[in-house]
Amino acid sequence: MLDLAALAAERFGFSSLLPGQREVMDHLVAGRSAAAIFPTGGGKSLCYQLPALLFEGITLVVSPLIALMKDQIDVLRARGVVAHRLDSTLTVAEYREIMADVRSGRARLLYVAPERFNNERFRQMLQVLRVSLFAVDEAHCISEWGHNFRPDYLKLAGFARACRAERRLALTATAPPRVAADIANGFGIEPRCVVRTGFYRKNLTLLLTPAEAGTQEQRLLAALAARPRGATVVYVSQQKTAERVAQRLTEVGFAAWAYHAGLEDSVRAEVQDRFLAGSDGVVVATIAFGMGIDKSDIRYVYHYNLPKSLENLAQEIGRAGRDGAEAICEVFVCPDDVTVLENFAYGDTPSAASVASLVQDVVLGDDDLELSLHALSRKHDIRLLVLRTLLTYLELDQVLEGGTPLYSSYRFKPLTTSQEMLASVEGERRQFLRGVLKAATKKRTWFALDVEAAAETTGSGRDRVVRALDWLAEKGHIELEPQGVRHRYRRLRVPDDLDAYIQTLAARTRSRERAELDRIRQVLDLTTLDRCQVRALGRHFGDPEAEPCGHCSHCLHGPSAPLVRTTVRAEPAAVRAAFELCAQYPEALGNPRALARLLCGLTSPALAAAHLTRHEHFGVLSAVPFPDVLALVEGSATTR
Image 1 (cartoon, rainbow, N blue to C red):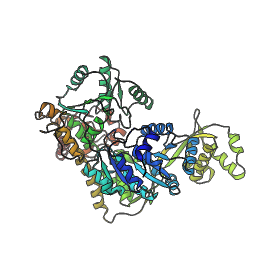
Image 2 (image 1 turned 135 degrees about the horizontal axis):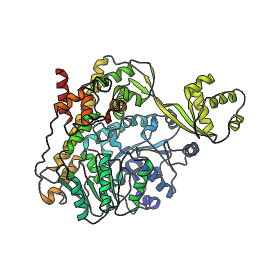
Image 3 (image 1 turned 45 degrees about the horizontal axis):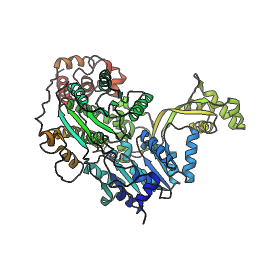
Image 4 (image 1 turned 180 degrees about the vertical axis):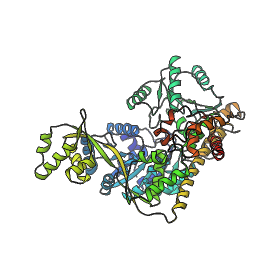
């Protein structure tokens, strides 16, 4: 009988297996698909890394986290395991080397992002490979009822079937029963093969501390001063808050850094490296920080602002105390944060008119479509993630069929002379290549090439121009970068009752809005719960009933007083003043929802394109609940 524990010790240096790991790997070794629902730090990655050494063929790992891919590959290579990743940072030479290892069977694991499956060449390559294991990290993203739904995940189950994967493995730290059922159904996993190890961790103290608006900074400073220093993460909801709080902590003597998506990649990497290397640094971050970060000695996790769901809360506090030592997780629960979080959810929902115009645009147009998603987003005033979701619905409903994205332009940097490039081909091919090179426009060190213009100049198809550029890059003549991505779709059918179909899609966006609002309210409900909060949180994720934990706010201090949310009323004068803008910006402010977004400070593609996010009216009612502002706008519109 295969001794998995001995193999884990021999190849990875682990003295024993963690709970659930053996059960998951036993299912995989037996040829069954499985799901691993383990808390953060519960050892999910070993569940595919170790079996990958046992199976013939490639283990394909799908993950949205490039940082996680790089870290795991470094560890695997140090252990003598050939593992690679495919992402946009690779050079042509690196890509060729990886493909050689994959095709020869040397590579045991190949890491890719979900978006890689939009590439037809990649999908075709999978058809000739033996995919022994198709592992999907962050698998909760497949579920529309999950807290971090990603439309590309909806199609992964189909891709797993298309490449004839012999077994599937879904991994996540946050899956309530409904989400776990979606995962199992999507990937064809039997209920008996869903392994859940439980949320509870006895070394984490969970404090849910009621806080009035404006007191969070004072409470954070007091908490940091009262406790021994240690590696700390402070989660905030906005980039500007991260900058302000990090600056304040620096002023009072902490090694503190802001971390958010608005920083340059190099700055974020530097912050991450400093935090990993130290023992008492403080990172003040949006939720962009922590995914895939392997630091076991985080002693404190503070939520300066309210997390937007119990799933976010569990995932973020799960980054503390992974070494088993005591750690404290404290949430400053300010009811006024709810307005900001709820308004974000409302801001994601497109108007019914936007959904209708999008669907009519792509369904009633040409059979073959080449779409710029950014342009489509601006045209119909639908946020990019929501737009991707709607297009995915159209694919799953077999209205559209997606193809490989193409690029309208490229830029390249010559690595050899044009004479050397031309000398490597003869006859008509040389004339064609000369025409391509002449069509390029010199910048500084790079040349820009419009593919369509080059195709017209040379009298050839765009595919031949692109193949020529790929060939030049493969031969080491140029460094090539694609630009101006366009997404290709083919129309398969027009729904019989298009109006009814559009209404169904619009209803799905409103249903997702309600789900987001429910998740926010669940966090508030947990704060005032009159029983053990840790056990209640565990039950949300499917843990069985158990004795009170003894180390949450309720167990330590008893129930909290009811939370009072500040009532802020919308000013009719502000709405009337904003109405004057509608005539100036009819495209950006063409419906009540768009005007309500402006007043609440919720950006949208149309508002950004019209530069209204910098207007004096933008955000003047940001403290007012969006439904109140929308009702006032609609009421004012009927009386004008």
